[in-house]
Length: 208
Ligand SMILES: Nc1ncnc2c1ncn2[C@@H]1O[C@H](COP(=O)(O)OS(=O)(=O)O)[C@@H](OP(=O)(O)O)[C@H]1O
Image (cartoon, rainbow, N blue to C red; front, side, top):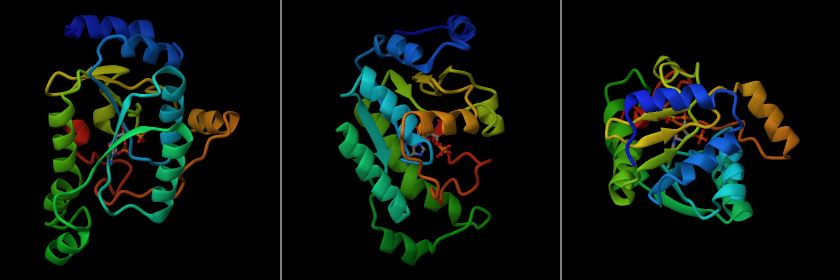
């Protein structure tokens, strides 16, 4: 399954305005080598609950940096149990204590932040991709979140040629809030990721 840039752009035109569930139903049939990634962040319940109805055994990849707030661990446990997620958790190769000992807890503008990001999130994420070798990767990036994301679409290709599918790409925060309320889903309002740190930044996993 390989699509050309022209095919992807034709699909993107067709998919604009189509319900996310239809996009997911189409994409799950493309390959058995498919994953969903989750941060267990603010709106993570939206994509995970949708998959429960369409492809409940899909592999769900979570890179637990070790620096999540307890609210995020509670949210992760809640969604994992509620949807019986086929969760594949990836953790850093070194302990949080050792990382903190070496680098502290650097802010984005401090020199250690790049190494910190690589150790706690980017290396585990590369490891996950290397182990699962996905052909289709479902994520929840959305237009207007960052300049990079505004240049993408519902379908895009990673640098390695993985087909990335962002079924809620055109949805706003208000749309997602309405969805959570209508479906009685929890919102992880206090989510914070020290790697990403600012909403307008890329943590790096969508640069690969
Ligand atoms: N830690 C971790 N593990 C696995 N996958 C992750 C992780 N962080 C981000 N993501 C994936 O990226 C989607 C957008 O997340 P964010 O904008 O919050 O962060 S990031 O800049 O991408 O890190 C995000 O979608 P949601 O979790 O539904 O928000 C995931 O598909």
